[in-house]
Image (tube, rainbow, N blue to C red):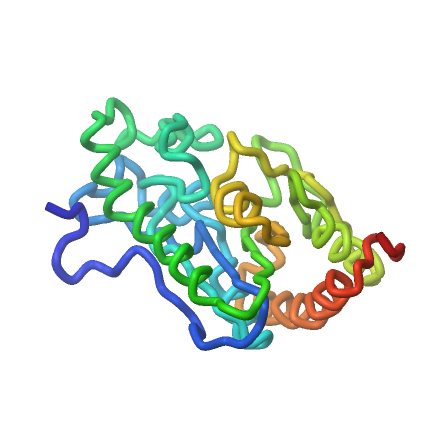
Length: 260
């Protein structure tokens, strides 16, 4: 039987599937729902909407950006505390028992069957949808855009970076966007800061983008900048203005202002 009961939302939603853009947007942590069968995972209502449960604000940015670019986006519905869709399900952090400094009682002592149930209900359908969308984009060389947000304070330490671009084996699209962002007045831009992409700490980019030979950017926006609709709209508009320039730079072989 599926972990998701009758009437519960599906594990993903697709925005603008007919979009003509080369960009494909993904939001692995867009939602904070918990299947009814799992109760509240032992967390208060306040804890279940903190950054430990999802990427605050990124759903609104992703939806707005998809519309502005005429791009397709796929957003994951359930909390990363159920299963982290940006982790290999075989690593412990896919089912965190502690997130930041907060214990997650409902993730303690999970059996192999418990983990399979969560993976089957949430992780596998979401990533299968990404595979389906990529396979259907004939005639377009996709640029994979992984959308995330990060907390402005982590373990008591404030973060000055406002937007970060992350990458691993193929940095060229991220370098182009970072260069453009640094030309924006007063913006604090990070590269692989506060996070970086790796096979151990990520899933979407290594599996869908790097293994597929795609250009990609993993974007992280600080959550206090996109916690309301105005902030989400402003960041969607900014990225919609800059990303077509990145696309043109990739076509022309430009990285950091130099022909490669």
